[in-house]
Length: 612
Image 1 (tube, rainbow, N blue to C red):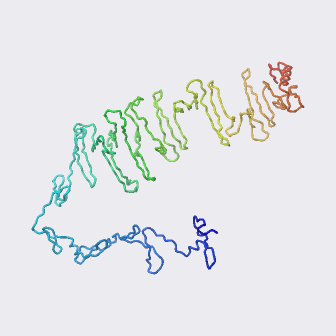
Image 2: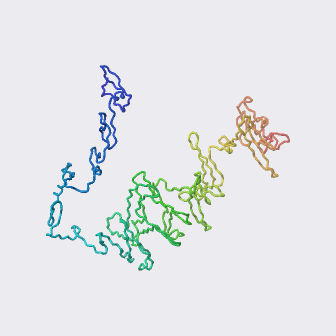
Image 3: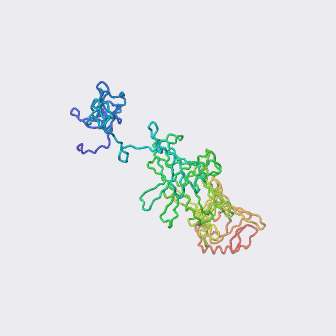
């Protein structure tokens, strides 16, 4: 018998599990629940609580809270001194008052009068009965303040002034900017409020600025990075905002903005730009190798629940403007010249940069509605600009509105086109030379998951070519009316009812007088061929294999006068040999008249056995 240590370890313990115990000298079974019923449950305390007993009587432990002036930190109860805020506020120290001090890390009491021992009288100063006074003897020279010496300073009375109450104030009445890039300096009045300041330029006219520059900046910052600079990023103007206020509502926004500007076109004919950034590769000589010019916006995300917007253009309109393009890609070059300087790509989404490269929402409105259209513009031979619209309707179907649609390969060779009058057109498979057309291929899948294809094409001579395992013509309800396969042409029953004839196969010709003449053939419910027409005519061409089954049915043709005679027993499936049949057929055909008789019968129609 294995020992307890040799038994496999239990992966989990349940209340119903059974343990062996010795009770009164006998081995008995005990469940885990019975074993633990007499033991105390595991203690569970919330963070910041203590274990004790607040009741006046004896009993089990109770959860105690931590009051003012105490806190639990790193497993220890610490005094914070916050309870001192509830102590009585005394107006001053008396000779009999005491103070609590920290003496070598331990609290202690000290008489308030003992604090005087911390002070000693210096030259020209006396301390007597708690009074500090300066004697008439001795003098003190206030040193001049420097970066390392604490001393006195003087006010100039112009930029810094002191009032009658001894309050210092800065007098900032103007700020002179140096001349930059040939523009003359201008004076700006500056006002300050708290930690911010406002720079207000006056109502300047063109004549107010010497030299009437082409552009003017209220604030100008100039930065020049010299060759060999080790600065990672140098900014002529920087703005930083640290937002620690949680979002409350759209009314207050609670948004931190590093750089904000507002430009208003306040009268008719005015033009305003909210932001105008100009970056270029300079006018110095060189090929441009290694130069990069760009307007860049970096968006950093370090948390998965953060919502990020790379660039948000909000239409804060009260009315719809006559013209409003949210995003415009344009050029200063000649748009009619293909060789003019222009962007290589108007909008580029790099590999793997986005889950969805482009997303277009619905049109304005409520209820069922489709997407906003994507409009492509083109100029045709008529010199008129035409538009192609691509959109989705409310059923999520793709709509393309255009004069036509052409699908072509990546080398520019068309392989399908759609037009309003021609429908679907498949061009030649080869761009030049003799070639069949492209193939229209329809693919189905059978019960064994095998793909079956039907292809339709036109050869170089204009003949239709189809390839399929078979053909089936059906009604709109799915009922087959004609089939064609390896077994030949198939006409199904005209209905699903019992005793139904097959669908009629009708052929129409035209008489010498120009009138249509039709003949029809079908199979009756018993499988007999039924032929109808104005003058029924049968012809047999080529080699015929004769056996014990009539070729066209017993009721379709009369006996051929020995043509179906066999060398075996009458009615058996054993037929004459092919040579015997050919001899019999030739002799039989030569015995027939060469023109149809007045009565029905067989005749020799230029070497063809014909019945009429």
